[in-house]
Image 1 (cartoon, rainbow, N blue to C red):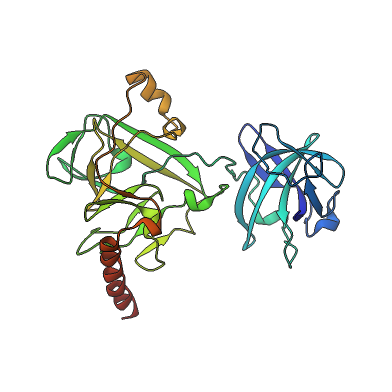
Image 2: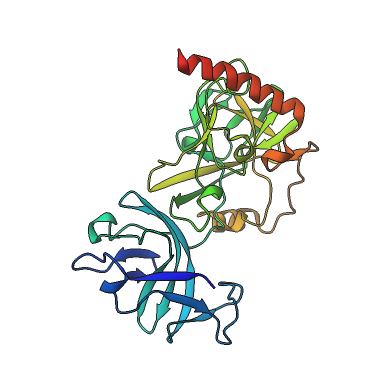
Length: 314
């Protein structure tokens, strides 16, 4: 069983807002009302937190109720842990390391939101330029009925624009932090400018839909670790799953998946269209992870990466 440190925090369930208890500094386990110790379920077995609703576990005697996982950088220290409730109090549990995390009250904004869910859908980051019949326009300014240019040069009307606000405090930040595909990373002028999109959203490369997260190499394609505390993703829905041009590169449009109801404005979609049949996915292979990226696509990325590295060094 792993050993954990527990920090008392403030938590507002209705807004999922966390903050370090004030006044003063919670510098170590000795300054809290509970100590470091082993987590177990009621029977003493290894616990899998969150596998059942209202999951409870034993920590140094008291029985805590699991709330959710979270990840953040506090005072320059990366902290991954989870939140649990004991009576009316809430605690942040952090796994024991060789160095005891020191969390000061002034390292977290008390109004900062930590999202304890990880089902937020993504797509194009706000500020992305999409090619339309009237030229390039910011994705956040697009509306239903606007005509976008598809990758094959035809036009198609937008049926709906989904949007969701998320933040970098997630149980699994790798699933939500934007991916930056640098200009030219996919070929000559592809994209024409840096393209930022969610990790599971696909770009079209040489006959394959490749999710952005599968392309991360630390040079030409990078993860936005310094993303703002909160940011907005926008999803473009057409009548069919298709390829549109974002920053000059072909990217997929909305395709039905289990996360669709997590859009902030999904109720609007239901009111307008009701329960529609799922949009069939385009008949192209899809690479969801780096190991699934075909060798012919990998050669393109590696070639452009070398060129990019030379340009950076110069």
